Image (cartoon, rainbow, N blue to C red; front, side):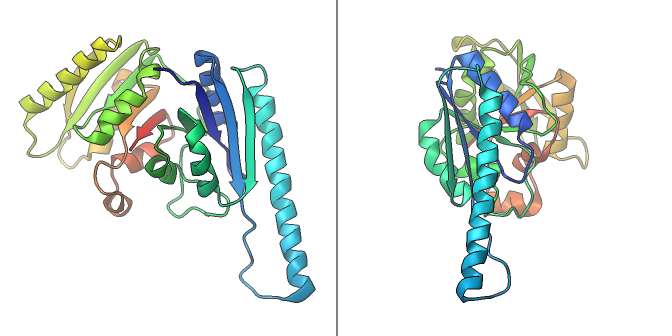
Length: 277
């Protein structure tokens, strides 16, 4: 298994340098094609007009969107010049999430930005939360402060769910290139620690058969601590530059309201995170 096509999702109103850097690195590491994709829609104002004035407003708005997309294409082509293989651009005047999800059929992995506002502007931004839920492809969320894909240490945040199993499979090309891999499960209240350790050990054994040497670890949340906080501590302990996790093992609504590991992983600012659902 490899990544033959890397897709990078760009945003008109967010920094794109970090995700472009990481997408270019992936294209080089795997000799992959790289596709840049972006879209935006003119957001109509919250007041009404009609006739020629309304048409002029629409024309000016669409011209501004076209200019911003053209600037993004230039930035993408400059960043991916001489990196990987085939380079392609797919921009459109459309709702970003809809356009990017349509293009996802061409990709093995989607590189996106990291931190996402709770209520993002659907006219200008495709949230990684939406992409990971609907793309059917792994999403690599890259925080703005990251300037390279650090594979010296990778952390698999394990939980015995279908989402986590899919994430580990999707991450195999990266895990095979990592110098150190740790598989950790955070023990929560009422969990059977012995059974949890047996499960993590099974994952480590499976990875060994996939040519990935990994270490098993079980970690308990302290009193009053959350699973996300404990995962952050473990990530710091092992110096993880990449975290691999299944997205939304609980319902997405529950995590949006109460918080959870997926919310933390998308919004943390130190590490790249590969998420699958």
